[in-house]
Amino acid sequence: MDVALIGSPESVLTTSLRLSASAQHVRAATQSGLVALNPQGETVPALAERWIVTDDGRSFIFRLREGTWPDGSELTAASARDALEDAIEGLEGTSLAQDLAPVEEVRAMAGRVIELRLSTPEPYLLQILAQPELALRQPGGETGPMTMQREGDAITLNFKPPLERGLPDDEEWQESVREIRLHPLPAEEAIAMFDSGEAETVIGGTLGNFPLVETGPLSSGTLRLDTTYGLFGLQVRADGGLLSNTGVREGLAMAIDRPALMARYNISGWVPTTRPVSPGLPGDPGLVNERWVDQPIEERREEAAARISAWRAQFDEGDLSQPATISLAIGDAPGWELLYRDLAAQLATVGLRLERADDARDADLVLVDRVARYPAPRWFLNQFHCSLGRGLCDENVDTLVEIALAETDPVARARTLAQAEAELTLANVYIPIGAPLRWSLVRGSVDAFLPNPYAFHPLPEMAQIPR
Image 1 (tube, helix red, strand yellow):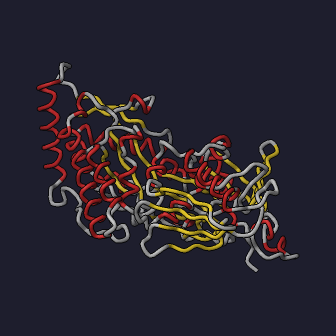
Image 2 (tube, rainbow, N blue to C red):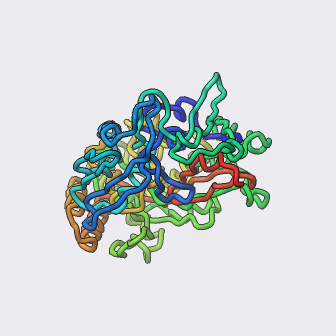
């Protein structure tokens, strides 16, 4: 079975803990954590065969499956604890480390049992532990269900024997699995490989390369779209000049006609939003509403233009007869080019000239296109934590998230997180547009591929042949 992964070989096969979407698929196939994600995006056993959660939600106890590490040493609670601690420490300084903040201690208990003690309940801890970055890696080879071989440009994944995967022995196991041949490629080449019949699946599509895909009636059986949660919008990086003013940043957010931006792509169910947290999350208490719902775009743009003019009249020493210039860091792909042009045309209506930035570090704005790891407000708010240095931030928001994390009452926690979202919204350090778009190309002969909110499609399940 041939699978084309959008990306370069270097980015897909990296040994780093900073993984692209395609690299996450490879890491999850070859390295296992305590738990994993199945094709539906649900958490299932991996190195841990089962677990319990205490009534107070502050202790997760995992029983490891019987087996050995790749070097032949025994899979023990102590060795698994050490590997998990190494993975957690390696994530320091990332947003995933913020997600793991409730984990106070990883304890090795008797035999093959380890315990994660939390400072406060975290309902989505299993979802976090299932992330490929939290695989328990060991010397000597892969800890996951598949091994990877590379000879020149040829990259193959093959299943380990059942006993090495923690399954009962089966003499005929090879009859129900197939080899996966991986092809890390630029989007255009990956699509061409699929169209020619050489690949059964293409994984890793974004809005940037979506215009390269055939979206007519003939594509209805092969094009799969994931309805995701996550961030798709503009993060403000500039801490000086025009965008240093909160009111001007709000004016920029007001000026964007989100439905018009998204209509160009004609994607059913792709919904615009003005909220930094995706609307419709499970358990959303409905305390935060969309902005400017009853205000026509013309009125919003008139207000935005007035704010920009007022700021420039007071602080801008340049030629006020010319539009103010702001820069945007955005990828180089057909979909990103369309988005850039449309944003530039919209912002021109309020007296702004949008230019491309050569380096995101020097940009006024950066396009954010990131799928959520788990469907909770805390993931979204953690993406803007001041410690990450991604752009403008609000320490009050970070404080509110910490207060919410200490709340054991779910209602009080939800209320505090809604307050944090409201504070982040008013800070206008992030300008939401909608949810991230993710797409794949899949032949009907491929089983176990299911669209899911995390746009994650496990390769081992695709390699299994139904009996």
